[in-house]
Image 1 (cartoon, helix red, strand yellow):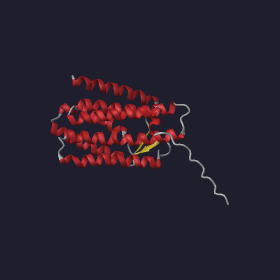
Image 2 (cartoon, helix red, strand yellow):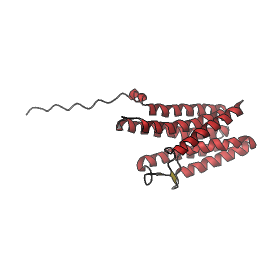
Image 3 (cartoon, one colour):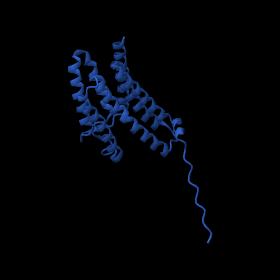
Image 4 (spheres, helix red, strand yellow):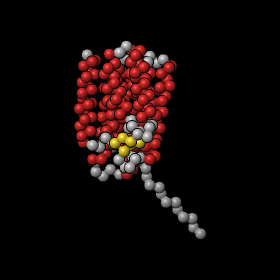
Length: 217
């Protein structure tokens, strides 16, 4: 008997080749905004951090819109983009708010449990979604993580009304509350594909950016 030759495996694309995908570039732009938000949170320039956090959401929504509009996008590209988006979401909506909380709390150890809960809830929420997808094909189980940033940047508008100590408690409680909603059985609609919600996010992002830019002056 003659030995059969092994069939050649299909060639895999290079890792860097996925940067040609515009949707992936939008995801990475959102990550860049989050890195800036983390940096400004650490050095205590919180108003600048708020701008980075809201733009992270804008680019996160943009990557989905771009992906759906691209013609000829393969299932492989779609799967890679979904994995990339999910991993970046943990940083955008878990790590970034956790560092904001820690920094605003002067890195007091009492804020460490809150930071752990925020990051853990985001990881659990994304893992659940990656396993089960949308409930009924149209609703999320648990509040979507992008709402964390949208709500936190709004709450921070009232930071100057309170003392640092009082607002650190408010921020702590709000962050824990958001984490609880992320892992709850609450059914929430998918907002990012709705044109009305997209326009709302555009105006919200520009408005929030303008307000915090003015506060920075």
